[in-house]
Image 1: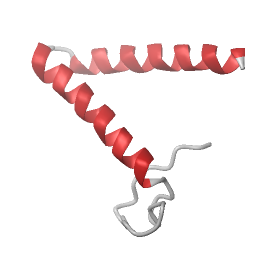
Image 2 (image 1 turned 90 degrees about the vertical axis):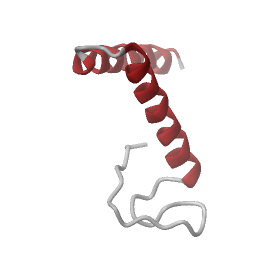
Image 3 (image 1 turned 45 degrees about the horizontal axis):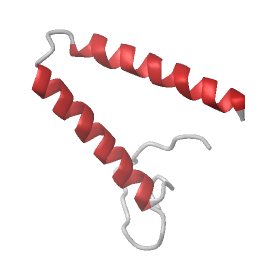
Image 4 (image 1 turned 180 degrees about the vertical axis):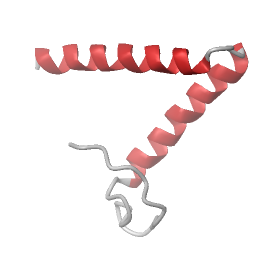
Length: 71
């Protein structure tokens, strides 16, 4: 499945947003994930937040790819 970002044409009817095509559950889970990352950044007040996010992204992709390869 390809990620579809918000298009600022959000709808709340049905199971999916008509703007981006994502399910409302996926949208809520993504918002919660971003909120957790923001809270972590605020709690630790990193001077190099961009580096933290880049390394976290790289690690997440590496782990996800390893899991997907095992399937």
